[in-house]
Length: 437
Ligand code: GUN
Ligand code: ZN
Image (cartoon, rainbow, N blue to C red):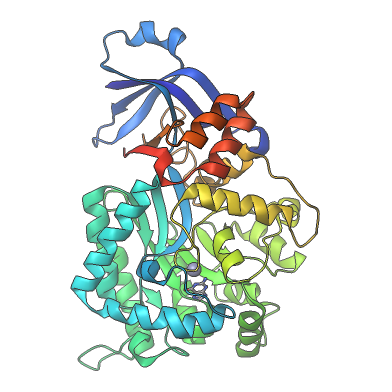
């Protein structure tokens, strides 16, 4: 066992997200290993109330710091670190001119391994301890990522990118070497083999990963849906309703589906543990469909602002009641920092499609990147929070990391003011330490 004395932030699960923050100014966090050796939260609360019960436990004094749950990120692309900051008119030219050329490099093991190592280190350095991320359409890129994740002990979910049409030949799924199965069939066989190799190994999870409907044939989407049914605790990740040209393309390719989102439903790809990036330009029926199927949205504000994609509508999302959480969407997104992502979400909320000028409370923004994101993944009570029983993934934030942060946080009169100061002024300098399980 080990105990930490510090200010502590966590989230109540029985209150609305905008009122869910629980803050202990002088707190004690006690962690203990479970039977598998994973450190979990054993006790948490006021230092003075808890310390007598744990008087013999080794104590690290972090007074003046803030301990908060490790961030949970719902969508990114590990092969796109080098793509950050590549401007384009919009999504489709950005994919063609910057993203697809870079992803071709991930046919190489060394390139993939080096990129995976950098990506994971950068996620952890920024305080992200759970991540759902894309690899490329090369199985090598998936194995390289999982191998590096296993070493770092980050909780990571990923999968082979399924794309059997409408992309450069070097990025399409390949037929088997022996010519026994075509590219589509082989992509599904590889997906199943990768599920068996990696899903549930330590802290790793597998996600069935059709890139987006336009780059998959009907047969590939159907096969992906069949795998999703056969492996119900495996995740699904894809993109939807990000950009008007993308939507028009998807509608043209799948004209019998009611909408772009409904295309995924028609192939059995909307269910619990299915996470769809963006979800910007949806009809109300689509939002209800997300709610009814238990699928969730990954909100990617810095990406949506950078690529000019549009604004996630928080008011309509809450009205429909579907789950959502935040994501950096590197490399459409502009930063690995959860503070930048939360600030982007604040801007997006102010400029929603319904023009409500919604002012999201800072604790709601923080919840979206921790407990809310964990709930969207079906991992509530496991990660994204510091309630008793959660895996002990947390960040130690140094409120004096910069002169401006020290000045502004000292002026905070309540929790909202403190959290806003961190969201608006924070970046990787704020994260003094990231502690994993
Ligand atoms: N839609 C299909 N692929 C991608 C991608 O790599 N990034 C983003 N932002 N949208 C996509
Ligand atoms: Zn993406």
